[in-house]
Image (cartoon, rainbow, N blue to C red):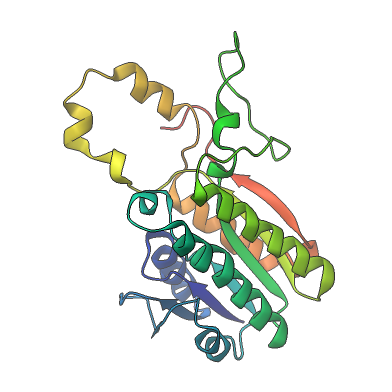
Length: 230
């Protein structure tokens, strides 16, 4: 089985390719940036590039995206181009190449402001049926890409699974020096109560989804650690 991993120079993409190769799976990593686990450099907004990369592929693990920190450095159109149009390119070329399975890396950020607890409630308990109320263009484009996955599963032989992952990689507000400069113990405790996950568990979830997507059909799953996260 040949696996195409998008975003292979990113934190999750690298971990996926490294794990797949350790298990002796044929893997092709693509990214706009060079990296130890990237075989082909190019952008998923380039459909011809995507078409070339899709030949002989059995499953796509689509992790490439503009993320929340990019909201301050990239335009809304950039987000649409990469997160929506790029995903559409991958789905269309996967169908054209006869790829049976597609795993899309989404985010719990799609819930956005809905994660704020109701008045008098200690927390907002999240399930796959939780409402979506994204805060920014990042969440909006991830939802749009999820809907594309659903559409292609309904209309084609491709089977897609969406994994809404909790936060597992450093972001701009993870700066240790900034965090330690403030007496924010309560904030740190609250953060560890939800929306965190070990990257090894995220990798395992993707590999399980890849193995079962073709039989399972479209579904959305939250990938998060138990509460509290430690």
